[in-house]
Amino acid sequence: MEVQLFARLRELAGAESISVTPVPASVAALRKKIAAEASPELREALEDPNVFCAVNKRVVGDEHPVADGDEVGFFPPMTGG
Amino acid sequence: MEVQLFARLRELAGAESISVTPVPASVAALRKKIAAEASPELREALEDPNVFCAVNKRVVGDEHPVADGDEVGFFPPMTGG
Amino acid sequence: MADLFTVEITDVPLDVPARTEAFPRQAQTTGAVVSFVGYVRGEGIQAMALEHYPGMTESSIRDTMDSAARRWPVQAASVVHRVGTLSPGDPIVWVAVASAHRAAAFSACDFIMDYLKVSAPLWKREQSLDGSWSWTEAKSADEDRAERWGWQKQGRVSA
Amino acid sequence: MADLFTVEITDVPLDVPARTEAFPRQAQTTGAVVSFVGYVRGEGIQAMALEHYPGMTESSIRDTMDSAARRWPVQAASVVHRVGTLSPGDPIVWVAVASAHRAAAFSACDFIMDYLKVSAPLWKREQSLDGSWSWTEAKSADEDRAERWGWQKQGRVSA
Image (cartoon, rainbow over all chains, first blue to last red; front, side, top):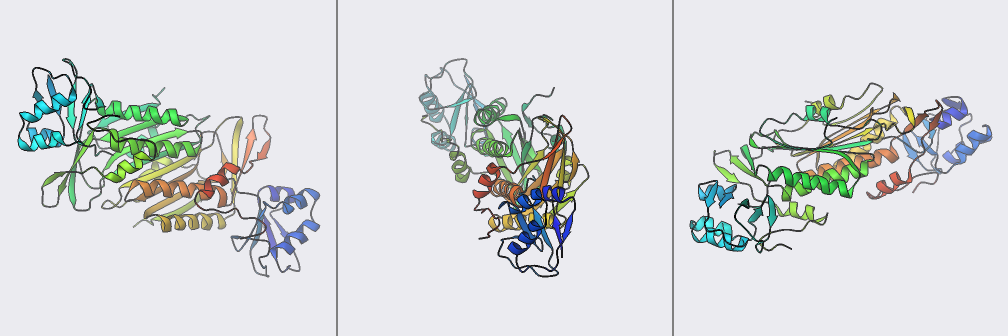
């Protein structure tokens, strides 16, 4: 699974997406797995409760299931408008 | 004094203004004087508590004084916008 | 530099895009512009005619804009109101407000419209489909909205 | 006939008068159009850059417009949001709402902006006068405004 990262997370990762295999079962597990393999800055950012996860373009909570084929993205709080 | 009438009052009077001499001392007295000499329709309209009086382009209450040289107008509730 | 607070009563058709273009903003400090346009609705009418009290209408709207500027940090505000004969779909009134932030711009624009409705001497007549003209009745809903801002109804006995 | 509910994310400068001109109204039934424009303020910054989540940003704003249309009798609504690099004074976002009456148009436009601020995936960076770029922090005032409409903050643990 290619997990997309946006804005400051993308900048911290130095990449627009991160490859994750095998696919963990939940957003929480996915977040944990990416954080474990990330730089300290990216890990800290991912562990911030204000960082959102979208599954198939909808914001979801940490308990939400994840499956192969889902489109998943992490991003910081919105600052548009 | 030429008292200006607007909208439906102008239409009922068939004129844009009414000449009043001598000038009564208050808006209430002026209203009464015009009404006394008006057609029944205009009298009724002038006695409507929702009909406004402006002295020198400011809405005032019935107790407001009136003097020669003041600009005075009567008009129904506003319906702009 | 353009005047930042303007009121215009006009019998010329209201060109909303041109007014929008000309509305003065401050490039360094304006973060929000809220505008309102009121249009003639065509349900059951073929025309509308608007008249005003020259001089007083302008000063009344100007007072309302000054009140808005005392309540919120308004950087610029414009009101253009049509008089004369209008057709369904024609703009009647355009109000624009600039501020640093959107909350003030929304509130001030809403406030100006609410006060204008109940305190600016303007009167509408509508021509129904059978050709007859009748004066528009004032709406109590407009008074209710104005009361949200502390407006008090005036009449024969002033407060 | 033009689509009555539209969302556009664009890297082309936002031409507000042209958007105003093209906004679809209904000559017989539209009595009010409220629009909002947000601009880049120039205090201490020389540029702003905006990025989004293609597809999700559009669907999120579309959801917000649909919510507005369920709450108020909205006849038409458009949102255009810039991405890319902007300069002080440039429009960032334009929102327009048409309704029969002004109360609904004001509320729906205000609502759409408030929801967009807290729920549309868009992120700003600002370039300060010394040339350095930094990400804009989310403002709790924006969350407070969204909560007026019943919005609830989402995060790691969803409701």
